[in-house]
Image 1 (spheres, rainbow, N blue to C red):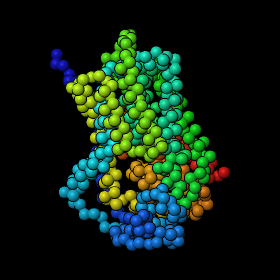
Image 2: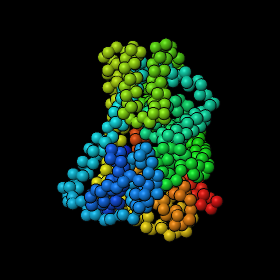
Image 3: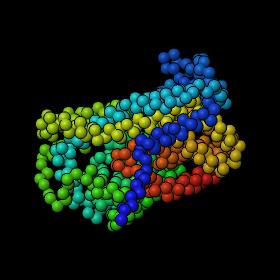
Image 4: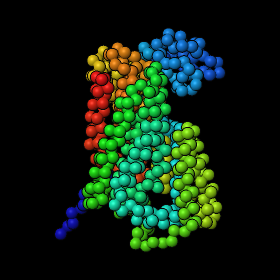
Length: 510
């Protein structure tokens, strides 16, 4: 009897393919969306003048005074330009003009498609270097056996306390997000936290949910985050403390919802591992992240191993301090972990050849994650080079002007969801949109602080699923497919949208 051939099961595309599909779709849209630009105003500190750039590219200068800003209907404090708070070009209201679409043709389109990816990798080189160095450090720590020994001790401490792992980690990361914009830096947390979640009886999806929801919801519900709330408030011409009560309440509600949602899934998985959305890769995940860890065997946790782990953890402590207090970004963070590498050369006791091989092997493990960061940046580059971002902004600002206050704020929230998908930079979106959108609040009779909330919550909520953002990088760290993440997060996404709309309506009516 002839054997019937098994039908090959189709798997969901990898992170790279998802980004390339989005890139192709965005590139196709640029053929149909007209190109256009707003005139922009930027402060030149050397000459103490404003540089006005017209859509045609022609530049002119004006005195850097409050009167100049008033003449251009930009409701910002001139000192915010001088002290560097507003460091990006600000769009001038009512100045939008269509411009001639860049000629590309077939050859030009193919070149843009390829060059945007190369440029994306080049523009993300600081993040890529950080990821590779971090991978190298983890390779060294693993080679010493310190991670396994520490994990075995930790497994005893987690018994009957697993839920608190989710509560504490998600809350702390969300606090970092709402206060100083902790986001991309959380990439460093995955390698050290994933084994802990697995030892607690959870799956890799629980780990990425806890860390990434803390990041996304925390930054979405920003209170004093300088990269979103503060810069957007300054660009809107108001103090960032206006509307603070509603934002704090939103943070509490959204973070609380995320914690309850994650715990419900995690406990279901812990009690019945077959319920896991990543059950098909559970064995592979444990082998990858826990290695040859034997929970029945309690090997000696040596002084050298303890010192290795302390050195590793101190790198994270210094990183968090530098980001929060000194405004460090990835170049400085990479320097910290490179310094940790040199300290480990004396602490780990591996020998020169094993030390170098462990570092290189660890960096190689995260090479795919590093490339994902660069390729994701290419989508924004295509948007910028095609000059369609301002066109989208102008279209929506014209459509929502004149609506009643409740309908206006709800529609504006969804507008910012769309804008946030295409414009991933929170500060860039703030300075581009606030001079255009904030005056519309005066037209419909609501507080400008509500515009800040619609901006924060709209561009923040789309980060849960936007392939152009941090989610695919985070999923690549834990080997979880985008389809599995969508199955997990869809209900939470819908509940959070409803929660936001309720808060927006309350904010308008009170």
